[in-house]
Image (cartoon, rainbow, N blue to C red; front, side, top):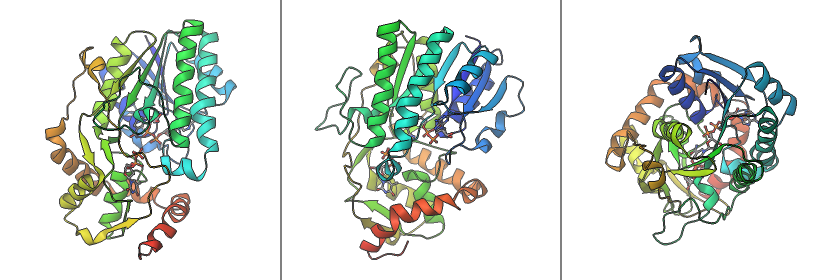
Length: 347
Ligand code: NAD
Ligand code: TYD
């Protein structure tokens, strides 16, 4: 392992992984490859931009020629694929881009990797491929896939294609499936950064349904650390769950954010639910722990970790205020205007 291509390296989790790798491994060359969609942001990479073992290439994983030439020009021996359309609500409004990047794009990366003779290919997948988890079950890596949104179905397609390349062509692959991730540099459409940035401006906070849905919250540094462990120590052809082991109802997470922001609950607006909304995600991550993975943030640290996350968005207003303009505002209107109106609030 020497020349590692990190696709989606300008996004939320990909950039955290790049920042960790560039500093931890000066002997590796880290090439961030990113299309710079609405969610890609070169500012996420400023901390490593001037380091000699880091390079950025703008490109699309669904573009065969861009992928082939990057593999060759940079003598890539390892791929870590974060590149994806990642927001469930956007996938419900417009699924096309999701299928193109999350399924077709993964296939193009794999096909070129196969021809190029890639040493290792790690694909970043999600707990959402397992679907809505009933009762007190915790998904295991061999559980069946039951994706319910266009996002999770497109991720399941990519995840299964990686499996096929291992079984059919003997490619050295790893899949990781992470749970809901939070922390600095997250695009402000996902629950935590969206609600924090809206609450700072005293704007209405649209809670879907009754707010009793359950997610397992994982700090971004721990998600990136789990991918690192799987990359270094994982067994070829295997999948590894990366869980926070930190199940929370949405409404509890929202109240925690309000507490640390010192904002009133009157900002909360209960709006019509997301279509096909999965009630609960929960995974078992013993398989990754057996490789020696340890989290920095546990369930008992969540209050403090949310306080730190709130503090980061307060200290970095210029980062998210620049984003919340133009296309973002159009998306915001499409997603929330009618919902908020139904709850008697104005978007
Ligand atoms: P993000 O939306 O913040 O970043 C995605 C990045 O991929 C962006 O920089 C974007 O420009 C880039 N990209 C999108 N399509 C591309 C394409 N066709 N070619 C090249 N680059 C492209 O997403 P994130 O939250 O950092 O998620 C990263 C990965 O982790 C995704 O694969 C996602 O499915 C997975 N994941 C996310 C979470 C979560 O809670 N955020 C949880 C589990 C798994
Ligand atoms: P999100 O951050 O979109 O992640 P995911 O859908 O991948 O779990 O949402 C997290 C939870 O928060 C999910 O149950 C949906 C809910 N949610 C709201 O209630 N209101 C919102 O405006 C958003 C964006 C999410």
